[in-house]
Length: 166
Image (cartoon, helix red, strand yellow):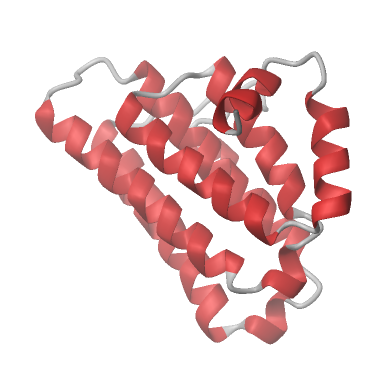
């Protein structure tokens, strides 16, 4: 998924059109949603992998919305809709509180860092911040907050976390 959506984790980068990105993005969201709905027993031991795919979607959305050159109203509307689909996916993930209470803090840490490194437009940022809030609510509070303080200390993500909760 990183390769297809354009994540820069490998040397070869696949350039895809805006319409191709939208199609792959919504297809990936649909796969993750369907896994949550119909294959809960399959996810039992695979939550870390599921969350990696989820985080890849959010990162690719942040990167693509930051570097989207043709920012007309149609593109802004589509980006907002894509970000809203991420927020709905986050709500579905948060319903599995027992499974994600420990690993959601890692997603929060990554999202806060990405929001500072690749600041998306306000319409996308708001949905991502809502997703962060949902993930924090389901986090194991003693473990998650201690982890976030350690992992975000001195990093760019600390600014986002501080701004959200002050």
